[in-house]
Length: 162
Image (cartoon, rainbow, N blue to C red; front, side, top):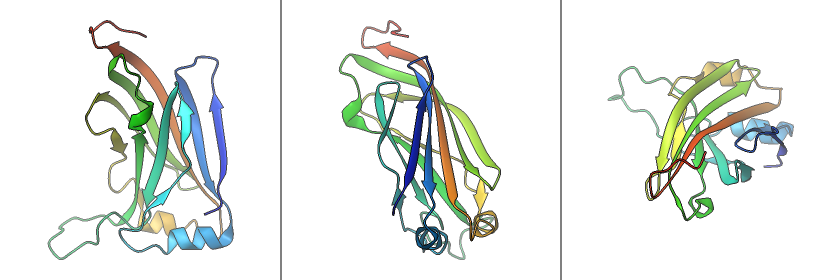
């Protein structure tokens, strides 16, 4: 996919935003018509001196079955901290993140902590961007955004770095 990307850092080094724009009409259609399990990934971006990446499953990560009661079909969006960018002296990172889709007025925010040697992936709740809301974007560009505010970085000795 051809992507137009905007990364803007504030004057404070520990917060910023990333915009993953899918603008080519063919790429938008490919995204909107993706089957369950089809994964799309943004480029890697840097906020707070750490490398991050967004990835999405436009029709969900798994195909729903008759056993999924209350299943809400839609786009699943994930934010991943690239583990290789994890600083050597850091034990834990606490941050606030917001994931949103412009045009669909879908947004999710949460505070999360990552600990060294554990999974470094967060997402929005299933149903934040439903299939119906995603289909309404047909003929438009898709703009998935991420805002990150690193609240605390804790070293191995348990002293706060920020």
